[in-house]
Image (cartoon, rainbow, N blue to C red; front, side):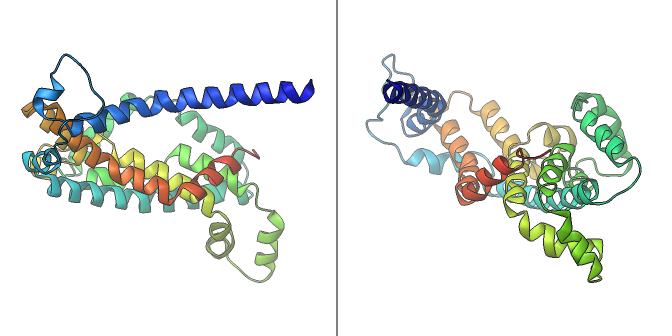
Length: 278
């Protein structure tokens, strides 16, 4: 009976996972199917998953409707700079909260966690006024430089949780050998934290690649738009061209899928291990 119960529970788990997979994949499959259809197939009353015929030319046409490669270059520049800046800053700050002994450290970490409860809309106007006075309005610096100033409370929290799992004896032994705190971070902590750093790097990449509001607020010149704003511009100019819009959306999403599959092993390991010790 115990064996039958285990089989029944496992079957329920598999069915739940299958239902979840179908729910998640259905919108993406619809987007792929629509991107390969002609206009007549898209507006037809009878829906079909398989395009007949398959219109591969939608992808080439979609990239011609907006300056896609310029927007792709702007997005790649902003995203890569933000990944480097936010990952470096959060790794350094998390080391201070995890391994340095100082009075008030835990209280300061509590304040950092409390800052995650602060809605972004609260600081939107003061930050906009500050960036405008610094001359960063309508400049990609407004999107890049803030990533180097701390790295984000959530990223610091994740890395600090992982650093806590690394024995302090390793750091103490390095200090006895004359290693500085920066040397300990670079030679011991960072090499042992590849899964957590990869997970945080993926989070930062996705957040900046898909960011819509920051470019919308700080950029006014279309030459400096990112792909997220480019898609919005495409939708406003060609709102009825659903197949082209879906083709552009798939091209926009491809880098995220590539990054996730390349970092999948470290990403899952990092997310799992950061929750094992607090």
